[in-house]
Length: 102
Image (cartoon, rainbow, N blue to C red):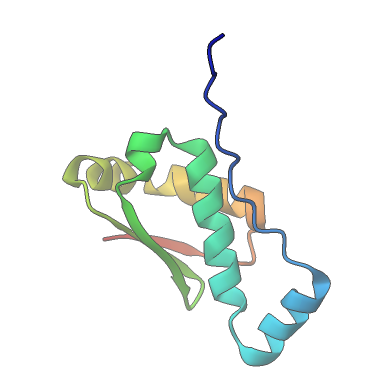
């Protein structure tokens, strides 16, 4: 009898209305949104590429993604408008107007 590996369940951040209200009051709505963007990237990219993403932040309606891999960073920079449009379609165009890849 062989034991099969159980696939890890993906993390999902489901923000309740209470958490969203708390975030709005204390000014960390952007941090919750950054977590949602990182989760989206985890689903969109394969595991090896996702591991190269160091941080995702939002400042002044600009998504800032820090990437360790020079090749992946270059790919994101070349397709910056594509990724920005993907994020705007998923989370709303009013949330951000720029994407910076570092």
